[in-house]
Structures are given as structure tokens and as C-alpha cells.
Image (cartoon, rainbow, N blue to C red; front, side, top):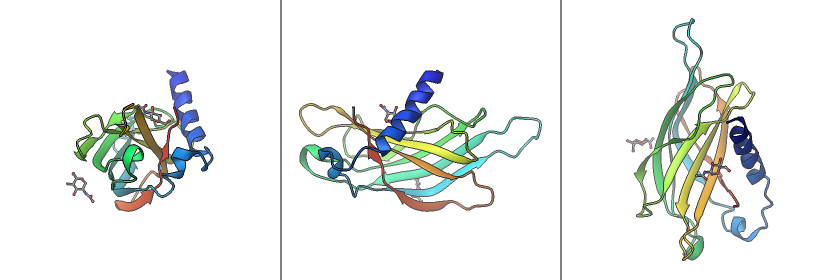
Length: 165
Ligand SMILES: *[C@@H]1O[C@H](CO)[C@@H](O)[C@H](O)[C@H]1NC(C)=O
Ligand SMILES: *[C@@H]1O[C@H](CO)[C@@H](O)[C@H](O)[C@H]1NC(C)=O
């Protein structure tokens, strides 16, 4: 378990530092996702119970690229909980609210076990490539934001990175 968690974090870090001049990444330099109504908070209920975390947001993207490099559009609603110290969770599936017939497409999110006061939430969009190989493609971003107190839901954009297999 610990090994898996460490491997997951390391993979995110490595993916983010992949040079931009590899052919496939070059095509996705301007690929962005919209995050809507982002909320990530900590429970403040019974002081006798451990603190838990929760998140709730929508994520979506327009179609990007063409042919074999095409990334299909999608929209999903993600919500989940985290616990432990540091707050963490495994990947949990988000509800796809729009997709384009790529039946294999899925979106998931998890709270990464970072030793930090801020929330580190990974969001992954996985689908089969639009070519004969139908290999799995995986775009992931890690959003780092404060665990909200009074902050209202807010919208922003992020730039995901493709995991190189
Ligand atoms: C997608 O990539 C992320 C980051 O490398 C990884 O943590 C996750 O497990 C991958 N998801 C799948 C379904 O392979
Ligand atoms: C978030 O997704 C839900 C479910 O599809 C939708 O009802 C809601 O309007 C969306 N909100 C925003 C701000 O996109």
C-alpha cells in the first residue's frame, strides 16, 4: 500500500517535469480543463472525532486535437472524502455527465497524502486513443488549494499532463 502511494506521487511529479519538446506533449501544450464550483473542505463537526476532508467540483474540457492525437470532450462531477493523517484517499470514480461515445472514458479523483496544510487533489481523465492501437491515454493534474474555511465555490482552469507509459 505504502509503495503504491509513493509510486503514485512520484509518477505525478515525474509527469509534470517531462520536457515539453516530446512529440505527443507538444500537441497538448494548450490543452486545458475547466474546474467549476471547486470546494475542498475539512469537517468541523464533533471535536471528538478525527478530522476528515471532502471535495466536490465539476471538471470539463472541450475536444482537443485531431486524428490519432484527438482528445475527446468530457464533463464530470467529482465528489469524495479523505481521512487519515495526512488526509488522503484512493482514486474514486467521478460521474461522467458528458462524453462523446468513448465508452472507455473515465474520470477519477483522489486526495494525495502530502505532508502539507493545503489539499493536493489529483484528477485523472483516462480514455482509449483514437487510433488502431486503442492504447489507454491518461491526463492528470494535481490541484493544490487551501482546504476551504469560508471560501465559496470557485472556478478556474488547469493544465493537465499526459502520463507517458
Ligand atoms: C493516471 O496517471 C496518474 C498519474 O501518473 C496515476 O496516478 C493514475 O494511477 C493513472 N490512472 C490510470 C487508470 O492508469
Ligand atoms: C456541475 O455538474 C452538475 C451535474 O452535471 C450540473 O448539474 C451543474 O450545473 C454543474 N455546475 C457547474 C457550475 O458547471
